[in-house]
Image (cartoon, rainbow, N blue to C red):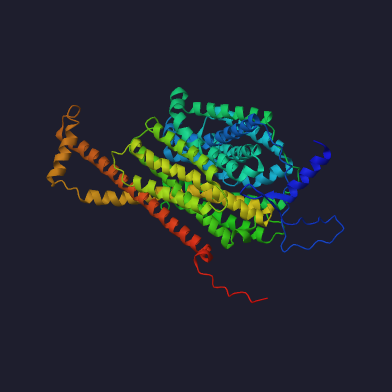
Length: 582
């Protein structure tokens, strides 16, 4: 390709911007820079310096396209395994490390504190220092952190290392996303590219559930670190073999950006920690839980004060509080909370019923299949104007799946949840790509600098929304369990012939090891109490599933009202007066 053709293609890349349907459309007229002699109208409001325009897309061969997609998927899987190994195997890790369940949960909280917000700053880092350098440094740091896990010999060192693991994993998320989009033509990035990337970010959780039992049998929790290290080394090789097409560097980071980000990181990190461990300590029973909440509120206020008084925003708070973005944020947050029905509802329900990872392998396969199938279907049907219809179908599937789960009993096993959990998993993969495309469109209409503000919205709804959904689910289940336990126990009296016969039957099970009738009665009473508690938990989870179904239907109704109001001109008769004759 001649230099003139390259220059022409770069000029076209700046002037022509593809819309979300995959068809190019003219962008707004380009403004002349300050160095040109012609006058330029002053903008209505200061705009932060945006990253340089990306270079022209160079088509790749089918083999290289597949290689980049596989590389991005492996990088996303590497990042996802780091957190999923801990969250999926809390009970199995706590024993060998001599930790309680609460202490093991703090390992998750330490990971989430920096991970909740670091992607925002890294967006500017890779624009200023180059995408190639960003990719190489990010994956090398992740490999070193994985390697350091083998020298952890105490709980406090594990906490520190999990903190740095959260730091190292943050760039891996965006790196996997970029590798998948790298090989996709611009006309397909916002449908096929987004669907593949979001599917790759969704599959680590079920894959973790599938491989964890075998790994724990082979080498305890150290085997988990070995596999994570192996994936990181493979990702390191792929990053060096498959370079990303890096745009020109631009100085986009200022000292005030770093100061502003520090307060944002403190705010999101504090909220993530409280939402992760608050239910375990109980919200009103521990005084120190108020300290991170207060710190998060103060840090948020300082961050808002800095951003509202800056010329070049890191995050445009005024835009984030506009009606359009508040509506978009609310929709994402509600759906993210509803999707907690799978991770914090069905999975925890089966674990409470005594199901281990080996017994839940079939359910994880179903969830994995739902994520992959939904990505394929969404890529096929995702077009402009269909986002509302796709979201409506997603909410309907969540409502159906949650209602099916609300009929569970203590005898329910994973096989009875295959259909319902496939629907919920399918709905998750169907909802996010159109939502992300709509949000990116709203940001690009205001300019490239608003992409950072949109990233804050998306991170807050997906990460903080996920922690919030888990906290709400756990709190609601615990509250309803206490209610049902009280109601069931109040109906059990020792004078009831059925209760007395049940106690005698349960106590008789200990007849071969206990000869004292009083001890048999005590053990029978304890066993009956455990059975009552198990029944109470089953009823509590059914209440949470039913609540999710109602929440999804309410969101579906609100979506229908919104669409009807938005398109009211198509339903109302034309009331415009006839134009006057010429």
